[in-house]
Amino acid sequence: MVTPSDIAIGRPADARGALPAVSLIVPTLNERDNVRELVSRLDRCLTGLDWEIVFVDDDSRDGTVDVLRQLSRADHRVRLLQRIGRRGLASAVVEGILATTSPVIAVLDCDLQHDETLLPRMLERLVASDCDVVVASRYMQAGGVGDWGEQRQLVSRVATNLAGLLLRAELTDPMSGFFMIRRNVFDQVVRRLSNQGYKILLDILLSAPHGLRVEEVAYTFRSRISGESKLDTVAVLDYLALLIDKAIGHVIPLRFVMFACVGAMGLIVHLSVLASLNRGLGVGFAPANLAAAMSAMTFNFFLNNMLTYRDMRLRGFWPILRGLVSFSALCAVGTAANVGVAVVLFEQKYTWWLAGLAGIFMGAVWNYTATSIFTWRNAAPADQQAPTAPALLANPAEPAAVSSAAAPLQTAMPRQR
Image (cartoon, rainbow, N blue to C red; front, side, top):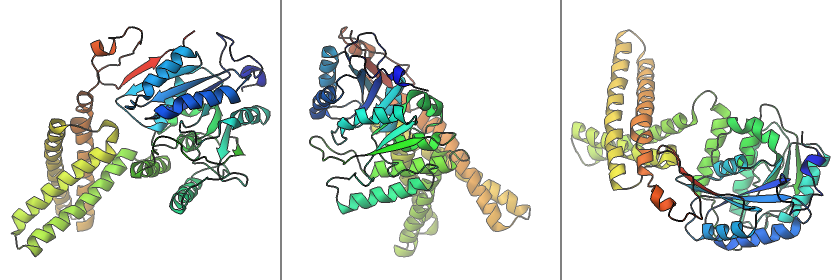
């Protein structure tokens, strides 16, 4: 348990070599115009505290990294963890926390919409109440969502209610991206995390083996000044995927569920194309069915590449073409397995629907397993066009850590003493 003495509230912020009381984790993606202002605001509101800030950047292309390197050289409290080859707020936060040793972790966004002046009060609440997590809530009586439109408020409320179906704690804002947590509590749940999507707080709360002690403080969500919002359709799908994973992920892998859902949509495509060609245009059944099957396979491949395997997505003409050919060939084998199993069971006097379902299940398992191994997993490392080692090490003043060929690339700016 972290005590007030561990956090060392009174220790001066410039005490070199001391363990930071609080590590602030801030994911960034194209936030060049906000990072310097955020550090300036934190410097003012955290006077008297020992703190550091870890920016985890997902390969921004707007000059964010250059600004962060300048800040890191000028201020030993500012650190940069640069990721190349992968993205995602949840995984960025996890990697940022793992790169620190502080007893207390705070997570906030870089867009200046979170009220950084609440951090001292959140720290005091964490210590005084002996709780595990302090959450800044927009939905407490004194809080607010700022200038959100009705549609965004509705989406947020629906998402919050869905989260409440799985949560074991009474919480007004489980969707908050602004919170403070004890490091030892995070260490207890880190291996259970889904790292799915953007709602890392919800992931932590749902991953805890026992209910966490949570306190909330009210705040009003600010308007974005610079940059663009990262909330889009993919973020919504990621959130739904997180809920599904936490609900049934211990029984059925989330990726398989998504693969099966894509397959169900592919069935609709198949039947639609078949009906259009055969019934609408008078094309013979055999060629119409072949065209429908090819259309469905192509649809399934691109949707799986965009959603199911988005973390190892194939990019570029030739990788996509190879992936499509591989996917189609493997799914053709799965179709043969589907028909074969169904026929054998039907001849063994099983009912037609049971034999059909067994065939579909066998084909789906084969397609999922085979394409995971041969279409995406083996192709992904080669298709992530990471910088070469000579290019990375061209400037010896900026050290870089190069991972193995099978893993994403990551560079880090160390704390400068």
